[in-house]
Length: 364
Ligand SMILES: Nc1ncnc2c1ncn2[C@@H]1O[C@H](COP(=O)(O)OP(=O)(O)OP(=O)(O)O)[C@@H](O)[C@H]1O
Ligand SMILES: [Mg+2]
Ligand SMILES: [Zn+2]
Image (cartoon, rainbow, N blue to C red; front, side, top):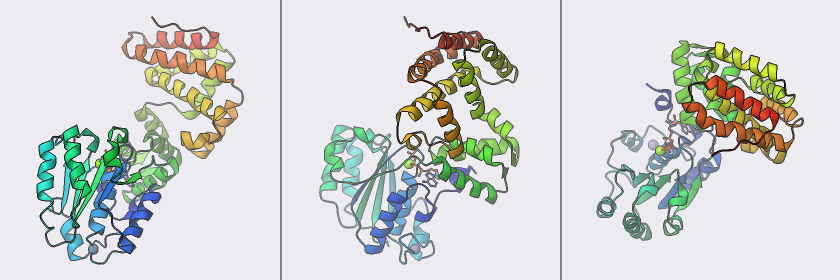
């Protein structure tokens, strides 16, 4: 079974990186101040559905522990079944018509079975049609006491203000590399998978703040490496380059060391690295340095491991903003072409030379 399925959190404590949300919900359970409409927003794989399910069990648990479901009482056991009729999951992407919502409006009149609350979890709620939103609004305006709605979306800006104003909103954050690493370390220990710190960092960084993505990447690397993850294999599978390689490459660019740049590209090609991915990494690195140069809270934006951030910061000092902006332009406009060209290497070399000469690239 996939790691992200095995490790679906069952209590609020097991949810990582969303303390601002889980603390509030725990308090609501402990104080009995429970709302009737919640809105969970945020990137994919950050815990919206997991938290919605924990909450749905917690409101019905007979002996909640610090606000989380106990997992042992009659109700918890009943609601652990994913098909229990008191927790209704609906995907608005495929049930977005007004009739689908009207059906809910009819059904909310019925009492929950054997438990206190019936909980509707409506995923991807931004996909509802206008008339479906209106129908939902009517239900949200006068929700029956025994009903809780949890709306979830990755695209909150598509929701009408009328819906927003009726929900208690929680914004799920991207999870930091540090938290992801701690989480992975525990899981690997549990699964008896060996993994060095550097690989751990690479995997956590590649997940880009999504726990689900991080675990999927970990899954594919672990099965490729058969229980012992090494940095070389991790880099190979991720297809991305080592941080230190980026730093080195940028020093060559800055010093206009044409020969070193060409030799490095040659080496990468011989090692079977994906040059198009490398080019993407280069524009990303230029952006990283630019953010570091221009923003006070740079690492809140970049989310890099501490030692990597320090190394980048040092390098950022030796670049000027104009050059970094040009690298971003040159390499990101090459990105698309790199996908289609027959000679990736030649195009990458040309792109590097263009970046070094500081010539403008024109697109027709
Ligand atoms: N904050 C988190 N803490 C621990 N595990 C998490 C967290 N977020 C996601 N996961 C892991 O990812 C899996 C999927 O998470 P979940 O379905 O809750 O994400 P989601 O935010 O609803 O994503 P989507 O937007 O794609 O619906 C979980 O089973 C769990 O393994
Ligand atoms: Mg979800
Ligand atoms: Zn319980």
